[in-house]
Amino acid sequence: MKQKREVDLVVLSDIHLGTIGCHAEELNHYLSSIHPKTLILNGDILDMWQFKKYYWPKSHMKVIKKLVNFAANGTQLYYLTGNHDETLRRFSDLSLGQCHLRDKLLLDIKGEKAWIFHGDVFDISMKHSKWLAKLGGFGYNFLILLNRMINRVSEFFGRGKLSISKKIKYSVKKAIRFIDDFEKTATDLAIEKGYKFVICGHIHQPCIKDVNNGKGTVTYLNSGDWIENLTSLEYHNGKWELFNYYESGLGEQFASNKLTKINEIEETGTLLIDVENGLLEELLFSHADTLRNTGNG
Image 1 (cartoon, rainbow, N blue to C red):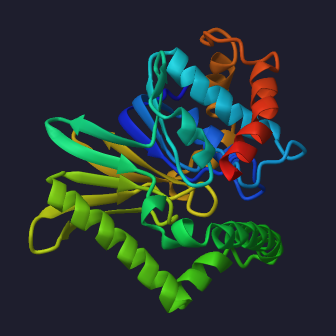
Image 2: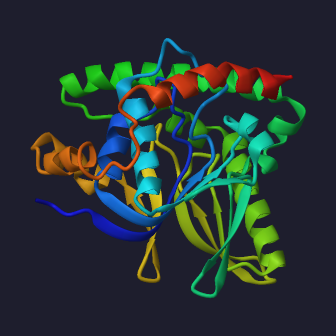
Image 3: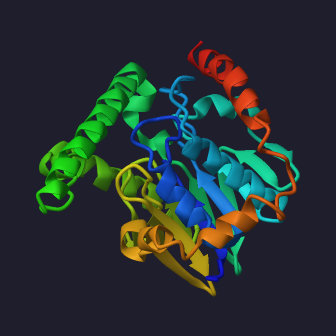
């Protein structure tokens, strides 16, 4: 049986559970393949902007169950809020056992400081035109759905997959400028504060790079997303790596049942919390509308 990979620290962001664009099944494969000491969920995990009770597949609930299971089995779990789950910010600084809800996090990694936050604070549309940002979110979801339909046809004819939204991003100068400005703002502030690492999400652009602005150097990291890129950040044995699901071969391994036993173990003996009886679904659905309406008000 293939063993889970031990990882010191994993950072995930922009999962957007509750939307059609979320690749929850692939994320479940990934979560079943790792055993992190610390797991940071860096914003936009639940998409409360577009959350609907009638669209909540089992694979999405399975992600929640796996995250709960991590915490129940000793993993330190940090949920950092983003713009799509901003309604949770009213509960920031809440801790329950191994689970911690925060807006940002300053983490000590072997004597070096890592500044971790979602990144929507640097998005001017969130401050001045929130309705426009939400409208853009709906348009982006439609584009992802259209992209999936096109990819099915493309794969049928042996052409392979393509990403329409990525092509649009890279062909529009304003989008490229926004990404550059976002990274510059984050790295300039991190250098000014004397941090070694600055870790963000939000822009769906996975990246690890060293940045020098003439005043200092910082390592900029972005965990990407589970809509298009299917990426995460992993830190282990003193080294950062960018995990990419498409390049990992995990899909093929699960398809050939090489990791089936891992799932069986997770869903039987090792669960310390009873999450199979619908309790989590009931709590999630009963409070989702209240939280979303409170955030909009």
